Length: 69
Image (tube, rainbow, N blue to C red):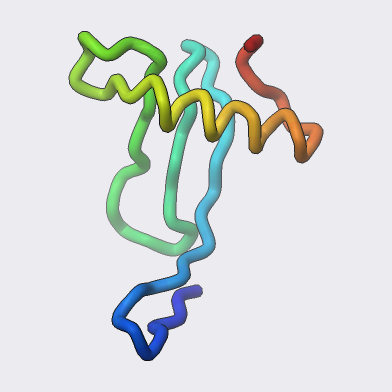
């Protein structure tokens, strides 16, 4: 579900989960686009350590499986 605000920003519901390879999967439910995998390795094309740490913290706070800090 999405909502467009008056300022032009968009609010989205996203699905976030830990994958078996240690990456974090980010997907838009109902979207035909493939999910994005985020890794904690800046040298990888899918690497984004800051976003990875943020999403890992969100998973931990929600009680979901998460990478170790």
